[in-house]
Length: 129
Image 1 (cartoon, rainbow, N blue to C red):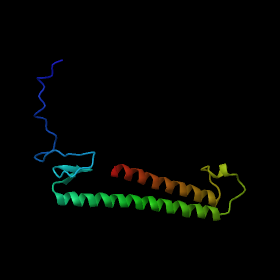
Image 2 (image 1 turned 180 degrees about the vertical axis):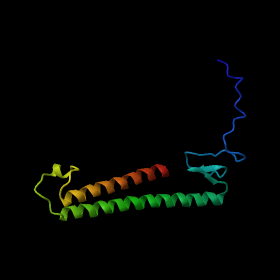
Image 3 (image 1 turned 120 degrees about the vertical axis):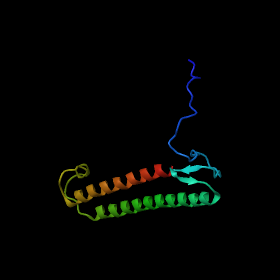
Image 4 (image 1 turned 90 degrees about the horizontal axis):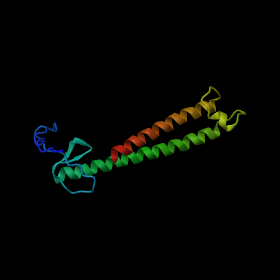
C-alpha cells in the first residue's frame, strides 16, 4: 500500500508555539526542551536542570518519609494488638469482618490504614518513576 499521499507534516500536537518536549528515559544533561513529569515542568537551562534535580530529590525523600511512616505505624499497630486482650476465638475468626471484640475492630482499622499507606506508596513510586 502506498501512503506517500498522506502528509503528516502539518499535524498540530496542541503545543501552540512551544517546541515539543523531550522526555528522555536515560540520564541526560541535555537542557533543551527536556520535560519532567508534566509539559509545564520544562528544563530550559542549566539552572532549571539543577532546580529539577533538587525537586526530584525532594520527591524521593518524600517517598522515603512515607515508607518510614508506614513502617512505624505497622510497628505501633502490632504492639497495640499484642497488648489488647483477645476473646477465646481462634486466629482465623479474628480476620473476619464481622462485628466483634475491640481487638477485631482495631485490627480492621489497622488493615484499612495499612492499605491506604500502601496505595499512597504505589502512586508515589509510579509518579517518581
